[in-house]
Image (cartoon, rainbow, N blue to C red; front, side, top):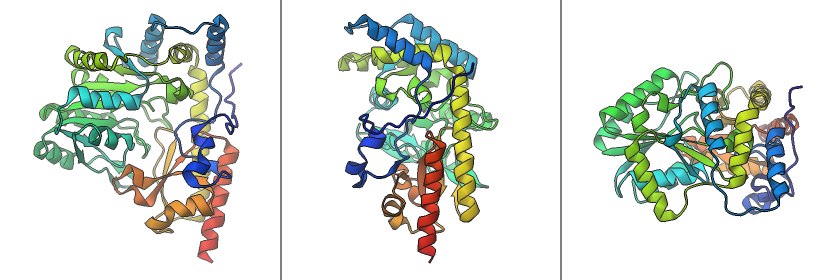
Length: 388
């Protein structure tokens, strides 16, 4: 029998999404649709693996089992067509630390690092906090969705001496799953201008309505570092486990020398055994999660546009994050308070992601249908009150 995705109320479980609302927003009685993790129990195979490990009763120093590497490589090959070799693999406690490690290990202070806003805001911190030059090239909204501005990207690479591109695929927050021709153009530009690509592909397993995730490493292995993790796909973020796929021996050496100084070369032992179980046995569960998320997207999108047709809603091709422009009904400076105080919704304000995101809000759809409906109702009530 197919395992069912189960919603879980995470209040009172030391959940970042649910248990810091008062600190972050000044009130507890809110719906949490901000932090990008899921309100679903992880698959039963993961729970069983953790229970079996806990039964040992001793949790000392552990080695990274080759079984995780094999399971990960099988998942990448079967799900995404990426023939990953085990010698390419490196590890970290998370994708965000790994992004910072790549910036530090593979570029020099003052060198240009390109990002494509609106984009996941730790990208900006990884560049600025490590003393590199942040180079921004905004995505453009065209014909009902976001596209890369390749002409502008080429100018930036040429004029700003860019050495690295931090790439997001699928894209957080705008929900794009990049097409092959788009990725090929990215690779062409980076090869022409000698730009290394660090591709954050943590949302690789969330694709919808015929979209297909293409790992950038399948198009240009030697110049691409791919960062991913079981954490997003199977709701394991608290177990702090991530993978770097580095086909280039030269770049692996830079990574190894950097992490040697940190004395950190892996994540959490619970995370690896959980990830192994998930990659081996969690495929059907993952498929069902995608069905739930897209159904939530259709519910919220349809409900909002029916009442407020001037909204812009980015098509959800990938991720579980819905990106909505409320600028036709709200001023940029009032959006944060409107959603927090009048709707009692904890959302991510688009300004965090830069690139003209000030009119936009990001909704986390990896939750129950009831919560999504309550969010829609709250927005309808609050906007209607403002309309008089």
